[in-house]
Image 1 (cartoon, rainbow, N blue to C red):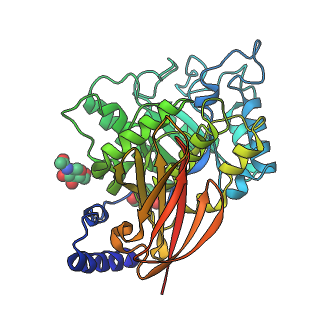
Image 2 (image 1 turned 180 degrees about the horizontal axis):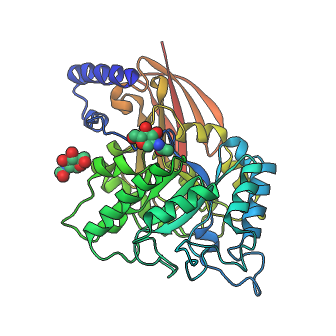
Amino acid sequence: MTGTMNLRSRAHLLGCVLGLRSLALVLWGIPGARALDNGLAMTPTMGWLHWERFMCNTDCEEDPDSCVSEKLFMQMADLMDSEGWRDVGYEYLCIDDCWMAPQRDSKGRLQADPKRFPGGIRRLADYVHGKGLKLGIYADVGKLTCAGFPGSYGYYDIDAKTFADWGVDLLKFDGCHFDTLVDLADGYKYMSLALNRTGRSIVYSCEWPLYMMPFRKHMPNYTEVREYCNHWRNFADIYDAWQSVKSVLDWTSSNQEKIVDAAGPGGWNDPDMLVIGNFGLSWDQQITQMALWAIMAAPLFMSNDLRQISPQAKALLQDKDVIAINQDPLGKQGYRLRKEDNIEVWERPLSDFAWAVAMVNLQEIGGPRFHTISLASLGGGLACLPACLITELLPVKGKLGFYEWTSSLKLRINPTGTVLLRLDRTN
Ligand SMILES: *[C@@H]1O[C@H](CO)[C@@H](O)[C@H](O)[C@H]1NC(C)=O
Ligand SMILES: *[C@@H]1O[C@H](CO)[C@@H](O)[C@H](O)[C@H]1NC(C)=O
């Protein structure tokens, strides 16, 4: 916090002197919004989530390798352990919808589908913990889950206790099939308190703002959301296409004045899963997703098949320098600084007065384009004052060298691709 204040007062001073227009963006006030007090998600949660890649595939006879089953999660746990995923930070192995049996048990508790999870969730959790990982599970605030399995409405305490008894470490709480907006809000809040009462540390992943969005008159109160949730989805489910990634970025930049300040240690905006390593994104588009999810301080939940992933996609997802930006302890979300001629410039303040800067080329015709950026325009004028060391992280790693505040930098960006830089100030 001291660092932030220091940066702000310096920014203010410089802004007065130089009258920099971009300064307004750096100075969105943070009224010290309180985060959910469970000590978790001090940096964005990292892990794997089955939904985008495996959806609601329950047909283990026809498709035994890709159905939602304990076997799938045990295989992923093995690989997260053996292939270096856990070691770079991907810690939470998360189950999404369609794990449940169609009915609760005789005591009203949720139960896993006995055919697909013959050992039950408790044993799966033990297995996952044995690999040094954590287990995430899924439920719904309403009467049914989105895929029609039993919802938690009326069962919040029982379900929280069941998850804690099983040794679950994260709950993704969906928002399908609620009756009123009051039920929706009360349900999300109640479950947060019910999880707390179990005494077990459980990351609470909400979709509360997303389900409020259709009701335009009721904008989410992010101060309140942050008090109850460790992260929260704002926008539609991601899918394996550039169109989808682009729409997430569009929505985020269009709403940045409302959402960026809500993020911080303990609570994050969640733009949904990383689809890197699947079928729909070109290499440049995968780079764009990784770079921008780092700028947005997004939870990093991969949804892909770790049994079949290209070495290239794996290297991108395991890039320690990019992950370090995502996980920066200052915990401030980045934002779009400007858009001109189909080039977007995004920036994110980091600890130790460093900055991350991403330049995205959104022009989908033609070849790579050059873009020149004046260093004095970055970080409210402070990113490179009086000089900085610039390192390119993506698409190619390398030190670009020392630059002075007055200099500019010319970069080449592929169509739908991104150049991600790190700027470290020097004296
Ligand atoms: C429950 O909430 C209290 C007070 O907000 C907090 O101190 C405690 O650590 C929380 N416990 C868990 C398990 O999240
Ligand atoms: C938003 O929630 C906070 C915390 O619960 C509350 O103090 C504030 O008054 C709310 N804001 C609005 C506009 O309702």
